[in-house]
Length: 442
Image (cartoon, rainbow, N blue to C red; front, side, top):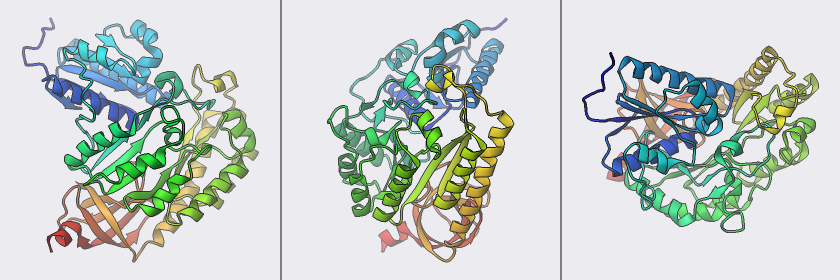
């Protein structure tokens, strides 16, 4: 017979999905710690909070499997309580309550005070920027807005996250200052749509003004932009990027497709001509800019002709960074009314073809870096190498710089000047020229 654990309650927060979920888990953990709770991230604890993802099929399956795994642990007596929050819970709460009723309680994406109450904690409104970061100490995600007003046909984010809501500049700056005081040197700005920032509270696109405020935060050396939208991009951001050395010459801008008919069906509000023109303007304004994009293949009605047009465009544009996903048919989205008529094996083959093209492009671009030197931040040690990134690379998704650990000792979070000696498709190998801390000590 299962007996309740006698040990002191320890709350284990398990995070699934994107960087927005990472941020939300960190805020939850900060609130719990402020209420005197013992909290850990993806370690052992007798109370479990699973922060789920509900974006596409693979993510939903991972979330459900994780819930079922912990329900088995609860049944076996290894954990006492299991709570579920996040996007999957927001989107499918009635179904989850019916199918997995033994979960102690389900919470949506806007129900943090209720979740805290269930965990015996109080929601503290005054805790601006108080988080327990789970990323390596040198970088942190900084969410500047929640929700999305875009009408993209394939996307369920507005269902799960609601309308766009910007966080005031002064609150973001306070959070950035607290992160910097804890040793964070790189801020990765995230939102469902960075380009919409400020329209709701300042009645104008105000990302550039936010960046001007953030570059003044002492201790922050890099500020990186994630998840811009191609229509309505505030071009004054490029002026700030050029002028301010702290703003990385990097932009993550998901473009999804390039065929006009597919873009129209996706409700993206742009065309191939406009998108190509925008990218050329980016490169003219900031010649050193690295552009990361993501694409979707296998969208309803995507013909072989549409796909060949996309392949040729990827070949011509030579993106520095690119990811490709297969279309996921999501309930309650506009595209769900369309027939999901591209077979799964065709979707996967198309994704593979795109990534083969990108692999070759990345290899060629990396070969050109051999002999050059770059400022590199060290994220971790892995096996025989210290692993770092240039300002042109974001964590987890982009290229990494590998430095032989037997030749040099480097600290996590430290910056070093690295000369590139070898290059593969998605990895660079280098040797240390200068360690920043040594320069500072001179």
